[in-house]
Length: 94
Image 1 (cartoon, rainbow, N blue to C red):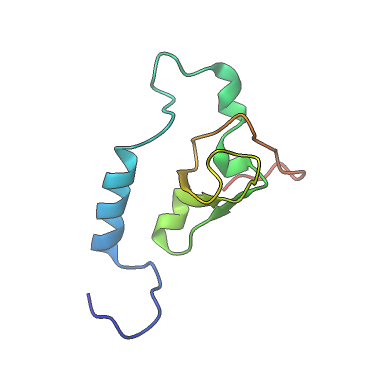
Image 2 (tube, helix red, strand yellow; image 1 turned 135 degrees about the horizontal axis):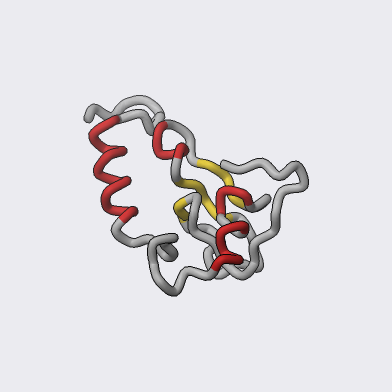
């Protein structure tokens, strides 16, 4: 990877490595037996405070910008969630 210009987030190898590393540290997985049904409708990707990353990683990851959330300022998987979820008025996701 050559440096010199602004990072665009479109380096496939880097993105694949990040995705694998970040996927290993999910906070919530719908496959976990203790995953509550109500969390399904309160996923980060549908929160008004979730901002998707650019480039390929933005398809799954974004930053939490909710000052009331313990995850404020952290990268989150779009299907994670928290107790401070605030849905978007238009109901959009991602």
